[in-house]
Length: 430
Image 1 (cartoon, one colour):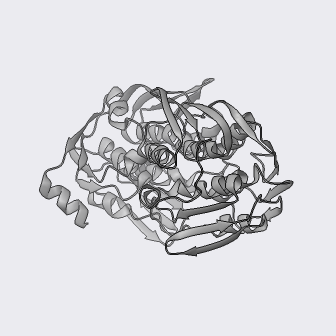
Image 2 (image 1 turned 90 degrees about the horizontal axis):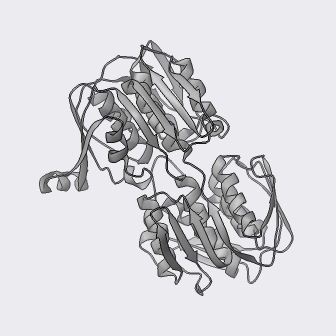
């Protein structure tokens, strides 16, 4: 087991390059199942979730060739089986995209119920609603999702009861090769939804309206191969922006789409952080004290739920009392106990956290309880006085490429060390 050891209290200075978007990659790679030919996918992040999804495709018979560190050629034309074995799929939330892709190609799919971060109920009922509207029979039993359309899916009207990124993307995958038109109403508008639509269109799909709340997919008979570059990761960029806000300093964050960061930029500026936008970079600067602010997470273009824990750390360093309202998930404050160990003053009531700025955190032994909370623990360690040890960092490595190297490049004193056997045993028990 690995842990991160951080000597905090050092402002960040330098340049960091953002990797490809995790939330786009874990949908685009399964989308290759729909393509009759080779997909050359560029700007793939080197993270454990991507490694898992690629290994799942290889187990199914796909050919995966590494072109360079961030480019893969994926050929799924040899896949003949629509059933996934148990194993890696259970550890990956995004494995549910395999249901839509397999159902779209074969008219059937048997996929283990997905895993991933656990912070409240994350049902796939809206996914199932869409599949059933297109003519599939769907059952969940024995830990598997069984979906069968008895042939090609049929286009249909699907209204999502809640704005769901996963359901929007999964229905889009299933509909790409369906017969006729599928219309998704109340669709998610996140950048990675648009990125998946652009990928599919580049392979020959006919998808209109991605980025709005109504997406229309006219099914085609075949998708061919091609090349596509994944967008930069909005949340990784926002995480480094929050790190500069919490620890102080100035950083140039490169390979970003500034428009995707506007909601994060606006809140940081309210807190007194300077943010300069360039064509494909932002410069973040914090030299003075932070101001309090209120944040409510919402679907895009609102403030992203995946940035909530990181911003909570910055708010701990601010002057005054801030309100943080979680508008997407029910149980995303499990990390608060870890921050309290470092001296944070946070009270949680349901979906609202009241954060009293303390201006200073103290190093402690803490742990990551999920992906974004793990990133928040690292930020807390950077901002704190003294040494911080972050355990269970496998959560962090699901979505952040080379975070130790990138932070070290900004002048942080952070290193990954192998935990002693007794500590690893305690982690497994905990």
